[in-house]
Length: 277
Image (cartoon, rainbow, N blue to C red; front, side):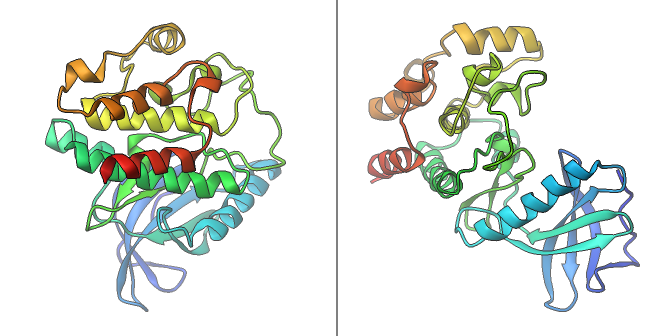
């Protein structure tokens, strides 16, 4: 990965790079300051000098996709793109609340039910916007849900998103994404669609309510086998204060047969809104 410029250098003639604040697929993310508009931004540095032409085209498509989606209130805003000595630097809004994964780690306990409902509803609406564009996000996880200063949630990191025209809807050779959040059909390398994202949303909601994903663990074979064949520990037993209707929704999202899950992100968002009301 390309080294970040020092604090004495500017990216794109206006962005002064500071501390490293995260890492994603092929990305290092830094806090930077926009000296022209006097505001903090997040800069994702992507090394492009060793990518194949097909990878570069995919990166360009990801940037155009983000430009289309940035107007959505629950998707992180892409401000700018600039060159950085053989690398591409993507400038995003800076979200000071960190990620849901950070929040769970810092608190050491599950989130209040109302907070989990609000965050899940907002990410469901983000997925609705993504799916309406024909895109499958493929990497819904707690680390990819960022929070604003007032606690609003935004979906970030579209590095694995599959767009129309990208080809296969099976993972024949390598499964991309974080295993604990993957739907059974993706673990089994079968055909999948937008409902795989809904399973992953269910895994994030379960984690916010239980303090851990449905199937945590360090052994990929064991975790994969549980995703395919086991039922997660019941939320009702783990947290009796979780309403039965919410337990039922989480169980539906985590259903192993695709046809037994909710069929759209908008359906999930509406159900969560009713529960929150």
